[in-house]
Image (cartoon, rainbow, N blue to C red):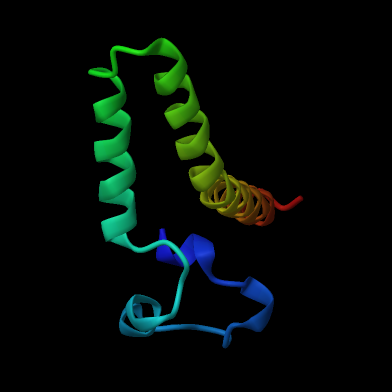
Length: 90
């Protein structure tokens, strides 16, 4: 999750795992645990409208990180495909 939050255009060529772990990011593991707990708590919400509002708030908070993770996955997939193409002589 940390790696997905780092700006690839403002990074050194290679970062050690310690550098990644110490990098300043917006969402930390504690926040992920809180989101998970908040999501699980929705199941016990008796008021459907309140549950929907809480879900919408949770989704709004999570979406920026989700977009970064999706982009990182796409970037990794594209790089892997590029490497496969090189290996196959394309």
